[in-house]
Image (cartoon, rainbow, N blue to C red):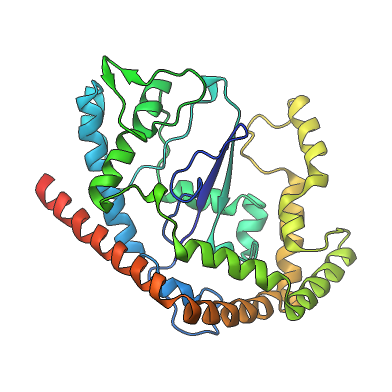
Length: 320
């Protein structure tokens, strides 16, 4: 299972962190749900990397990355804490490159569901969850480039007289753990999860759920065809931009009052119409079929992950 996965879009390019920019992280729950009645249950999750293993790989990745950074001349990072695992580096805002980060979560696969989070974070619950699990570090541009190797334009490919490894020190660490770069390998679990959503949204039962949810939202004064449209909230962009320009929102990450109000109505309508149960049933049905059709490559991905976890444990034992 995966959650709070940020997708970075830099300019018009997708700077791949794993599968075309998608960063994968563990879910809020500690155990895989086994009942298809549990809205967190997904058939494809059986082939994914469990939460504990994700953290083991993350700690090994950063342990190796620290050693690499020291080799490149960043001695101050020798004592960087790896437990909890640091958040994936973000390009410094002062670097002059426009960066947008979108956080996706399996726990919010069908949109926001928690009324408390909706009232506090609006539609930014996945971001808040991610930042709670993975401490954010403010990196200099040199550190960021050395860690990620994500160059834009004529940014330097060397630092302190050393050439930056392909995909940076984190990429070098990933190759040591996985045997090859995950960015160069298609993840069938990730792809099929996306395919299941695409097919599910075209299913008549899913469309009926969208229609019932939309009717409920209209009664609350909001006009969105689907929860995805509400989450995107293009109609709220202008108001939020005006608030920023007027200095009414000093923190751009803080959700606006309108965002929180919309998200709260969204959750209530999901509860009143039985939305989550309806679309989850469709998703499980489609994923079960996709698992049957793609079992060979899913099992290959499962064993590939297992091998990475084994190597990660060996690395941690070596460096302990």
